[in-house]
Amino acid sequence: MEKCNECIKCTVNNCRHHHTNKNYCTLDSIQVGTHECDPKMDACTDCLSFMKK
Image 1 (cartoon, one colour):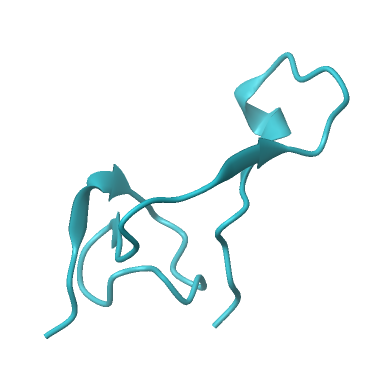
Image 2 (image 1 turned 135 degrees about the vertical axis):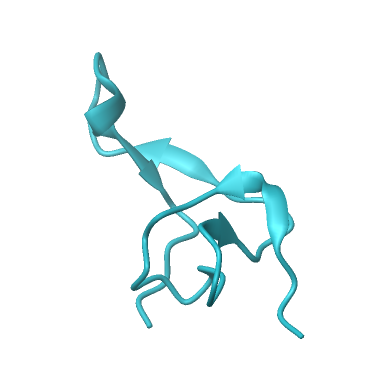
Protein backbone atom coordinates (compact mmCIF):
# COMPACT_ATOMS: atom_id res chain seq x y z
CA MET A 1 0.00 0.00 0.00
CA GLU A 2 1.31 3.45 -0.94
CA LYS A 3 1.90 5.74 2.04
CA CYS A 4 0.33 9.17 2.10
CA ASN A 5 1.72 12.21 3.94
CA GLU A 6 -1.39 14.21 4.81
CA CYS A 7 0.80 17.10 5.96
CA ILE A 8 1.93 17.77 2.36
CA LYS A 9 -0.98 18.52 0.01
CA CYS A 10 -0.15 18.20 -3.69
CA THR A 11 -2.07 18.29 -6.97
CA VAL A 12 0.87 17.66 -9.33
CA ASN A 13 -0.25 14.35 -10.84
CA ASN A 14 2.83 13.93 -13.04
CA CYS A 15 5.23 13.92 -10.07
CA ARG A 16 6.70 10.55 -9.11
CA HIS A 17 5.95 11.33 -5.44
CA HIS A 18 2.24 12.17 -5.92
CA HIS A 19 -0.11 9.70 -4.21
CA THR A 20 -1.97 7.55 -6.72
CA ASN A 21 -5.49 8.20 -5.39
CA LYS A 22 -5.24 11.27 -3.16
CA ASN A 23 -3.97 14.85 -3.55
CA TYR A 24 -1.02 14.36 -1.21
CA CYS A 25 2.70 13.74 -1.44
CA THR A 26 4.20 10.40 -0.47
CA LEU A 27 7.51 11.85 0.78
CA ASP A 28 8.24 12.40 4.48
CA SER A 29 9.41 15.93 3.69
CA ILE A 30 9.97 18.14 0.64
CA GLN A 31 12.46 20.84 -0.32
CA VAL A 32 10.98 24.19 -1.40
CA GLY A 33 13.09 26.68 -3.33
CA THR A 34 12.86 29.50 -5.83
CA HIS A 35 13.90 30.23 -9.40
CA GLU A 36 14.06 34.00 -8.75
CA CYS A 37 16.79 36.13 -7.17
CA ASP A 38 14.23 38.08 -5.14
CA PRO A 39 10.90 36.20 -5.09
CA LYS A 40 7.84 38.38 -4.51
CA MET A 41 4.96 36.04 -5.44
CA ASP A 42 4.02 32.45 -4.62
CA ALA A 43 4.46 31.60 -8.33
CA CYS A 44 8.19 32.25 -7.86
CA THR A 45 8.58 29.22 -5.57
CA ASP A 46 9.13 25.60 -6.61
CA CYS A 47 8.99 22.14 -5.08
CA LEU A 48 12.60 21.04 -5.54
CA SER A 49 11.60 17.47 -4.63
CA PHE A 50 9.59 17.16 -7.87
CA MET A 51 10.52 14.20 -10.07
CA LYS A 52 8.72 13.63 -13.36
CA LYS A 53 6.97 10.25 -13.66
